[in-house]
Image (cartoon, rainbow over all chains, first blue to last red; front, side):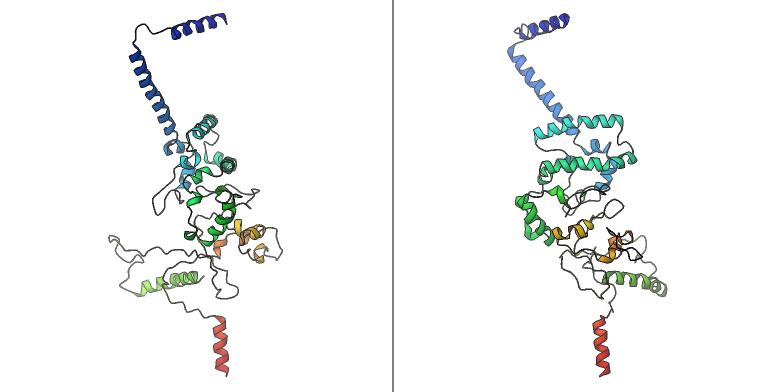
Length: 198
Length: 151
């Protein structure tokens, strides 16, 4: 303990002393440069964990399921990638989610979903995580693209208008309440309350 | 339903047609090396307007799109709106009581397994041009014609 204290004190002396050899300009510019490198590097690394190649390295079968849905291929060619829906877009929320994801690294190490069979066994639990998350944030990731204020009810089918102009408009329901299993196959819904999915 | 009948008819008649005609060697409509101009894929009707049934026992057609509706061992997406439990909230027609009966006529709590796969009988309608003329005659018309013949 004493040794550690001495070591800390030594470093503190070095850091707190004014620089002897380097000019203020070099230090300031060096700090600026390192800032760019570290911050940029951090963000690049984080962007990397948002790519489809990264996601599909574990969740491959889910990606196959996505390909036949409207969020992958459609008339206008706008598409969603995994992170569009599963990672918050705002920086602070994103960092929070990424920190949470450190648990998923542990899952990767232990191989909790390393085979299709293991994944199927976990599918309901995993789906429920996402349903709860989207329910809690009022389907924020849906609304990043599907903004309620800009929905044109005259362009929707009757059934859609009936639901959107009542329960959704009143805030009693949120997107995920009904739109479950729109980008992946649903898990076994035995025992799951489907009354919300209308 | 009309579409299904037409499809069945066309399936029955096409092979006969193909054999009898020397000009039509393939169902594809041309040599394998040719680029065939295929028909546009028909659009599914999505008006939510019920169609008339051609006869009382006809399974009603689906008046809306069902793209990506999952009906398998895990879940039946149709029942999210059409099951008995939810029809008040959805205002969708409840599946008929016969769907809750097993083959011995006993009523079950949920849809009978033999009626589970909706699209075996219920189908969407498209804006496709019929390949054959539909010669189906409504029973009312038949009865009318008969009574007119009697007089």
